[in-house]
Length: 110
Image (cartoon, rainbow, N blue to C red; front, side, top):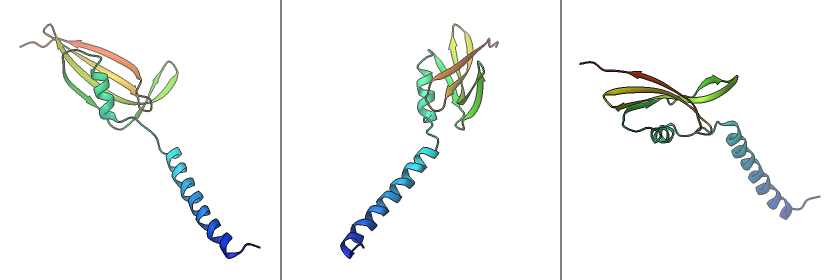
């Protein structure tokens, strides 16, 4: 049988175990996505003469080469040699790895 001194040790230990389990399970169940602002700043370093950019902060799915990724989608506009070039990009939301960049070039007439 456990005496009073044993219960004073067991009860706090059970509390610590319970709280640790809750914190760990919450951490494992939540998605650990990269910060979208940091992601777009990183993507911008790949380009020169950036005049505009955006990123959708809600992750979405994107399929490439029969693999489905959870990604951030965004766009970058650059201006070079009297030409605007617009890029769509897809970045893995968990790792920050660029999955795809699609280039669209257009000329502005005045």
